[in-house]
Image (cartoon, chains in turn green, brown):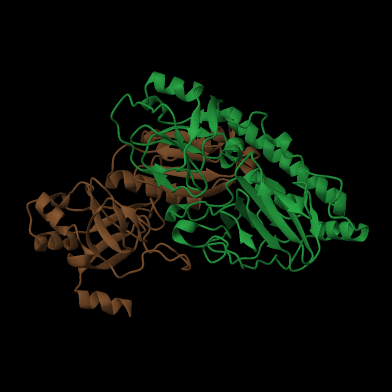
Length: 329
Length: 245
């Protein structure tokens, strides 16, 4: 690692087995980009990737290596050219790679064939910075860090490397289309109304579903803080602390909205007005301070259908890559 | 169904809501009480002993149990209903109680040594004055009671405990302290709890334990878990320091 960028951490699908001990899920904020970067190098989705926040990072390869990236925070540059995203990229030893500014979003995921090797803690390689565990020594990457890929690469990864190296190519002519997995309007977030939505007065609920909210500077891996018209409560009821999960939209004591994200606490006592449809959570991961977003309501069943449809599409993508390279499903 | 057995859904007024596409929350009530806690934890135990296909994990809280699942597995599971929400709800409603020999709470009894007052308990005077007590009386009352861990939440390993004497109840600080050291024992309203890691917080701090409440590298990272019964033991600063070596 030559320049680490603003905030670069090792992340994966997250840590689900210790929620009852109040260990947050963590994991990649944009799970879709994380998974696509993995798929593009022939990895399983649960392999660790590097999560870069914005650009301004650069690193050097110590060996020939198969990488792929996905996300909207940066473009990967090699020898003055932008490398295509969601494609396997075979770099020689000593290649200097740089992430440069992508105005579209915030986070970019870099996968390596075999996955980045760090110790597994509580069933995951994800970094949880507030308590300094997981990932590389529980911290963000700094200049001078050296990361290795896992020893065992998949048969698909091996076949991709063989294809590219025998033909002297950096990348093949195929790529995964991330665009078709995302809605056209990436600033309109689909939500399902939550259990306490009727704790708020009608004008607040209408505002929530029609007005624009701005991402505030306080936003981080724990939550996306929004500024806009404060929600007004109808009744002075208190919620007993209960489980929350990434995507839940809490309303704080002064009426502000917070979309809980990957590092959020496992329980919370603020009333919830809605939750973000799981398929739109990657859009929230790409929001930057100052971005304007709005919410549109869908039903619980629609959100579930969208989720199942997307999982089905992702499965087809993996199958297609597997068939291409190993003729097995 | 035998006469001895009933299901939770019809015998208690439980309700269910979707927390996300991957989680449902079962609500048993709206208050903090030993009875409700007992319901949540026995429901949790029965569910984890008899999981449905696709169950990922559960998170018990004061009066709710949240059930996480993999929608892809549930969607193809042989359960009544069209959607995952319906399927999981239907399964949860069949969970029956009153299993013989399952009345125990299943928690451990843990004694937590605490060095009260002084630098370790900067707010003990606030708690004393708020309740018209002396500092010694606060220590005697706090270390004389028996507590139950109702839930782990807020930060890794933070145990919310009930059972504190009413005469110690003290509201949270108006302005949270910027950094509360790990091991600090605090009071908030009728609850007592221990900070497992150094973080900002609003609880009134009355002492500190030398025990490590959270360690990411341990088999069970959190020392306490829901259902444990807890007593506090008053120790001196010398005894506190002896724990640390």
